[in-house]
Image 1 (tube, rainbow over the protein chains, first blue to last red):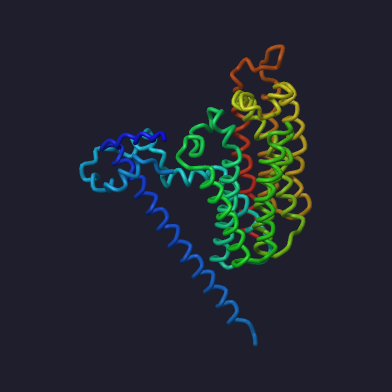
Image 2 (cartoon, rainbow over the protein chains, first blue to last red; image 1 turned 135 degrees about the vertical axis):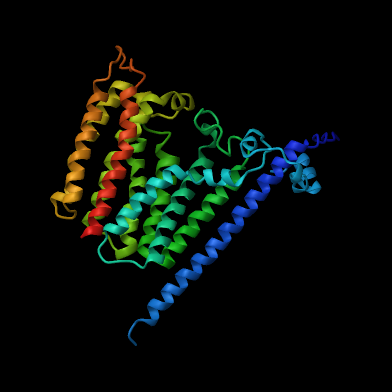
Length: 56
Length: 328
């Protein structure tokens, strides 16, 4: 059985870059999720308001 | 996509090193860690293409009779943008083999190894489904159907079928880029009339001269990747001839919204002036100094100029449609 040699550990520079990249991606996901929640809320309010305005 | 080394860095907590950071933002892209950034995911949506899609969709929405609540209109435009971006992401997934060959595209996230093909496909499909669903919820089923149709057209008809098959790929495939005014209009009215189809026709006829002007000076990449763009298959001389023919069809066609009474004087005058500009630009392109094989001796300066002008042309023309609709 051939063992796969472990990859060399990241340098400090690479670790820093990796951390920033992941943090940036996490923030982007957070922003996107909040935006989607706000969008659905706004659409729901507009649709409900429109429905309430209809004559019975 | 994590390698063992990256997992080590993750376990160590790369963030703990950040107070000692000496990196600037510009250093980051130079280091390929096989890990994507937020910018990579954004680039998967082809934001530059998205700009034109949003713009023409907005013009269709504004030109439509009646009105749409601001929130719903914004949601509709967002859905058009995200739907187009999703189609772009699926396109990058499918074209990853030729993207890796072409200079212009080899640094994209998939060929560069920062985003895996599976991740890209999932990203595109989820966004496409979400954009269609939200469009249906915010506006109406017909607009959602058109949005789904435009995504399917771009992915299935253009990307997977025509792009690698025929030099006429962008003629028919270009229809995908002409959908946004239809979707914008349908979002307001729930149906289609003559005007949105005229807007569709303008973009449809505009795409070949626009894209072939670019391909006149950027065809070496396509040649290497085996994509049958018109200059690669038929040569530069035939490409110039086709550009002239499509321009001769497009400019008179662009006057129809005004002549048929669907747009006002602002649009009519804009279409005349901008169309004359297009004729001049294409006339220069057709009379470019060339060798016996039709290859430009001026480094394709007129083709570059025509490509730039074509973008300005469509922005100004659809801007005039929007202005006309707003002052009505």
